[in-house]
Length: 259
Image 1: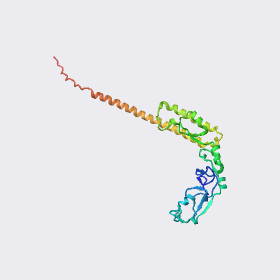
Image 2: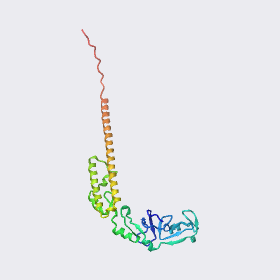
Image 3: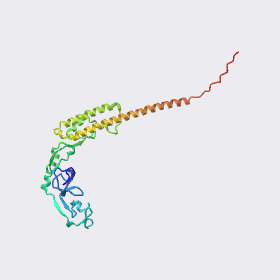
Image 4: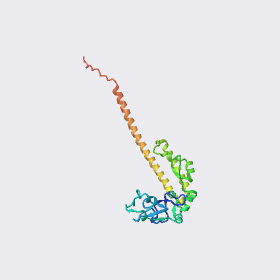
């Protein structure tokens, strides 16, 4: 049986919108339906004498200059007449159950292949978009609140110059924004499915705090180094100034005379 946790791609099927999309199976599928080389699930599969199965594309490139074919997996020679072809019936392909393409973002919908495209395009609430201001990936349904709440994630980019006079306020605003976004996720009617996105948000918040702590420590180190350098420069300037002063020898003291 094909592994259900593995992501596959369909090829050559009549179901609109399904071909070439990375798709995870819910139903078990006989290994005979999966090309042993490219792992595609094609409309038509060919079984070689060595028992390996190839899609038509991988089978075709196994022949060179009209000569006999060589199995790309074990190098066994074969001729075309020795291979048997098997089609994946359209009705069985349409009824095959698969996971929504937004499963990685929290969607738990499972449906037949002929239903999945309609769900994905018209009903799925787990579409992700990128905020053009901060670059963070958020649910399309909460993008408005994300943007309106300040969208401060961009202020924490690695290239941002650290400023202690602003850092506390920025961190506080980021926490406020993150809490508002997670609150919006909790009010989503599908909040029970949103644990992966919420965990991602919490992880991002933790990373921002760690970055803030690291930047603060770095700033303190730089400040200490700067202070030491300034003191050293001041001392050097004093020594230079003293060295530049003219040197006067004291006149010899005449011995005191006593009457």
